[in-house]
Image (cartoon, rainbow, N blue to C red; front, side, top):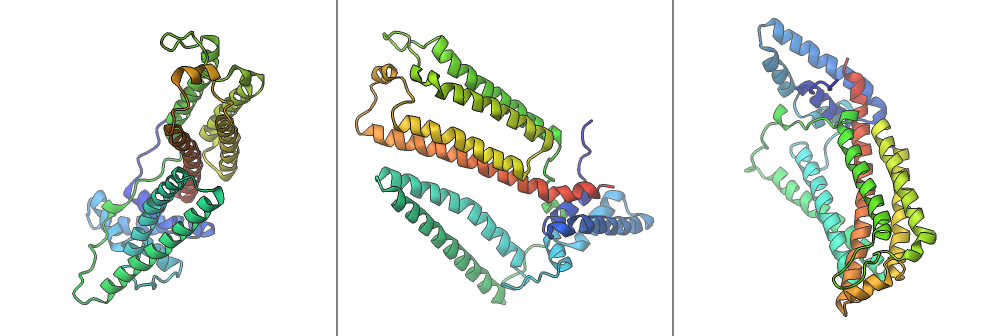
Length: 327
């Protein structure tokens, strides 16, 4: 059975409860839902249409973030309540966009420049810390000026149309991820075996495997076992949803795959020497850049996979309390 479409009330309660301490979310969500229901019933008794009654009640309650802050007795006084929510949302958005792009760009530049690992780490960390401070300072300064400017108009009032959709924490929403993961992992395993059983032909050269045949003594079976574990992991995510245990397992699987793969690549043990001779590797000065790009891409994909799992886990916990409130 398909899950019912979330109502405006569902989305409002979720948006407000996610700002509450986790221990208070369930009770807060239930009380808020009852309050909305009572006020909607009162408007229905006056002859208001159901959809109009619900919307009018939510407009009267106002921004769910502000409501949660009031309920939790968490004053919004950093720059004053007038622009506090807009300030926090903009700063969060800038951090989410600017910091990853700046960190990745600086990492790539340092690798291309041939910097030492310690120098790279120090440069990336110090630059990101400086960006955190500068973004916070300048954004806060702008909003502080706006707050104290008598000519500045108030922000547009909050409306229910600004509510985000509820995160899909049910199995129906995870089925497509499971299918995609299993298909990709199956193809990956087939390619590893196929390139050895039915080697590829490159131009006039004889057919040959791309990966070094010596890896079949240990490493290729090792990676095939990891692929099977990744399949079991995908099934676990589908069955239970993301949680911190699965996040930890995801980190272990990513490290177990990425570190040996990059080590084999960096030491020249990953690819078949005959294949490298056919394609003319190394490609002069371009080989260093190509190697760095490959390493950055491998590490970036692994990091993003871990971050994606953390994000989905946090979103699932944000919405977990609201599942109890749909009664």
